[in-house]
Image (tube, rainbow, N blue to C red; front, side):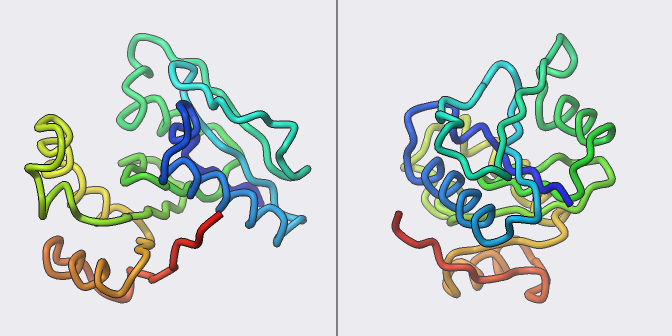
Length: 172
């Protein structure tokens, strides 16, 4: 089995989501040595993480993108997944591919883009309003860090609570 994780949070100096993504993948790889894990990212956002610090079953895949596939979430990633060996893709930062036959898991850290839009860039708020309801509905499972976020997701996005799993985010 090969599991893919969104590598884009590792393309810049790591913040909360970048640390979450890396530490989750590292812990999963160490816990399940018989499963292969891969950070998947477009060539326009290659991971900055040094792969020498990865466990043996964790790798980085940088997918070359062109004119059409540079639209990563709409075309690039779904087309890559269609021909890849990945069985599951985990979007660790609110995004998953909207089509393609792979199992999809989505992490929703909070709903601040919807609840407190004044604290975010207007473009990010517009994107979240348009895409987050669709992403959560298309995901096979949604991970949230707390019961409070689970309640917010159920109330605001009208999601079935059986699809949402509370998995606390730990410190490094």
